Length: 411
Image: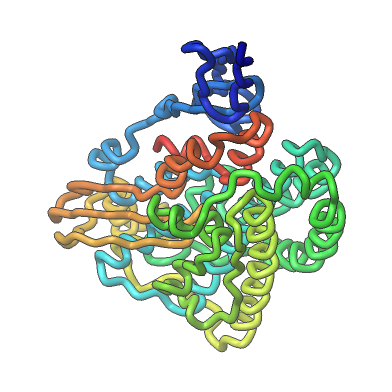
């Protein structure tokens, strides 16, 4: 009698009409610590091999787009904070630039360079979080604890600028409400001096580490063609070999004046995503240095916002002592500034990719319609394809390397 063949480990082969495998359904999330956010994957496993997965999102959906239709334009930045909260200042600046594009506001160079500095600091903070957590999920706790403290040092800078650390609500439509104090510039200099040796040591611990490479090389790969088909942007797209960066493709805030390299990978796997973000931190440090050099070379060291009294709050001492500034203060805060009717789209290079704002204004006090292009929501759709056929432990690392932020995913 012919003996039946053993079932293929990777496929649903039937033996005498029966599937001999024991399949397991596993909930990865919504509250599993390895998901780094509130979202769920229902995995179908054969042992530790992933056969299928179904995503469930929306656990922290807060209807930001609908809320924005009921808020004055001036009050919307607090919504953007709570999307990718790992790099909130980039979200803030993206919204301010969207409104400036609608209203035809042009910022002085000093204000633009200051925005570049804070956006690149935010990018570094975002990438520190992602890359140290990749190491942590691969079993390397020391790099995580060692490097993560530099995110807090960047948050110290945020706190000096705006009084907040995580949800920053930083800057204003039209520029900056007030100039940065000397402690801000001192702490930025401390980042430029102290972070490079730490990054080098971090790379020595992981980049050529045999265990780390075994865990990340060929883990969750995706081709450039598939990434483009899904609509990938940001580090996850560049890791697939596509050198698209909004700062270059559609420059804003004078990024065209800066010299930097767009890092790209080859195979689009977890290792490439790690390395692209690592190199981007070095490029961000270079951009910050260039911005500080440009600021030092400027003769005008006082212009921190455009001449737009409709958007910039009057000085407090004037509000407390004169009627006209008090009136303007209330008009701005209550959203009584005239806004032109129009339909625009503006995007910035967020920590995770192209962060876009599609704004429709009917000339009223609030947006008629606002749509947020959240990079996480778009590239998370590819997660099932990236992990099918891999092991459960690889799914965790793949998710970490994609840097899925639940706040941005759901919005």
